[in-house]
Length: 231
Image 1 (cartoon, rainbow, N blue to C red):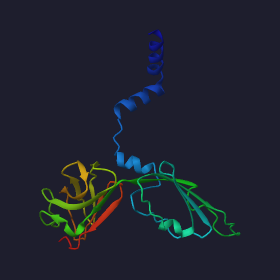
Image 2 (image 1 turned 30 degrees about the vertical axis):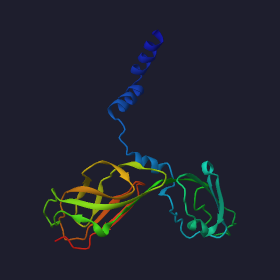
Image 3 (image 1 turned 60 degrees about the vertical axis):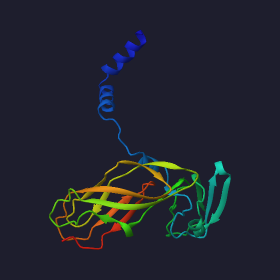
Image 4 (image 1 turned 90 degrees about the vertical axis):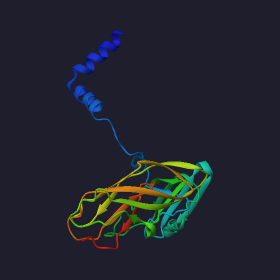
């Protein structure tokens, strides 16, 4: 007990410790788990998808490894763009380029030596051909009370259900301060078609075409470009 009192007195008596102590008490972390998951990986995708690394020199060598599923594949150059990550799980990609660059030629490494890839067993695709608005967005008029409903096609591998914390939709456009928040902040995804509903707020102050950035379960953006001009 005496040791605990000594330790407490040290913490409370040290000015820097006081500041740190107050910081952790008064500033609890509030971070979206999907964002945290993505920051840990070079890329987060769904099963049966590819990753586009761009135009890669033929001298580049890649090794794709998933130790849990005994996957070990080696490819060169642009062939990395054709590799399909068919199984969900965590992959490690090793990159190397033994090409010797001549003087005056760019010599920096294009990619990290090792990159972690997360492949999710859930795939979401927003169907913007069937998106609907409960009312028309008008210039200078508050959008409070307007709802967006959009179908989502969900595919799963080796899962029956999955929880999805629905992010806000970012709306871009000249003079727009519109945002869209999910009516239900957390949904249970299942195989097949589901509907997500969002409520708008804010104003489109000028005539403009609006772009709506919807975020999927991989924290990747799928954009809907509204074809009609707000006026």
